[in-house]
Length: 318
Image 1 (spheres, rainbow, N blue to C red):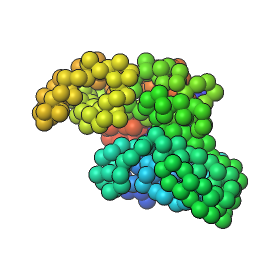
Image 2: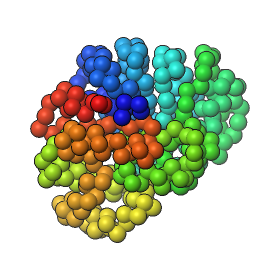
Image 3: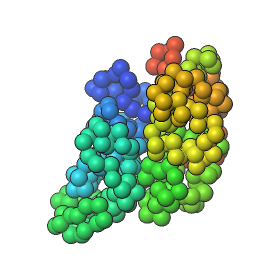
């Protein structure tokens, strides 16, 4: 475990951004190599990483992921360039299509052509970060006369949040790798098979560090029904082969019966998709992902019955 990258998701719930300074130092002391943010409905993806870059030089940084719809192309390039300048080679950028609820319902932007929009943003950002002046009509947007006025010394690696063959192929062909999410360790090989060899694979892994299996599965079921009923994730799990196991949940959810949707999720699905158990068991489960090909496992810790401090220390690499 110590020879691989080992990340954790920030910012922590219940901890203000300004209070993270001591946490960043402690994470590095404990052996965490990476802190990765997200961009959904909490902090934006860049601000927590900017603080981490300034406060703790030992940590690598990543965002998984920034939606390609919610910033214009020029602003996206500027945001990446600024953080790359602050981080000095310690930053990995994650781009992704996100989902209809995030893009359309929360941000008022039409969620149209997610594959094409992601491809176009990736191509634009690579050119912009390489210092090109861009005057081009892409399929999903057009840019005329844009050039970064603060040169990027070295373009940071760009990974794509990818779930199905099309986006996984794009991650392998045109990006530096892929960011995986909501999958079992046994699913990693199928995804890497689509990306191809020689690419960086990161994954966000949800962890509930408790030996109360019933409680962990109760929490897991609520998380699974919230995420895997979103069409993008539902199609991902059909592709992975869980369609039969999850169809009762999808049917109940579509009928408006949330309680039933949770109750019909099998224990086996909870145990595959959500890491839980003792600290040692959780670390062993993370190792399964690493052995399957994930180079940057990033824990998303859901403390249950323990203090966040104890959970972070208990899950630290050994």
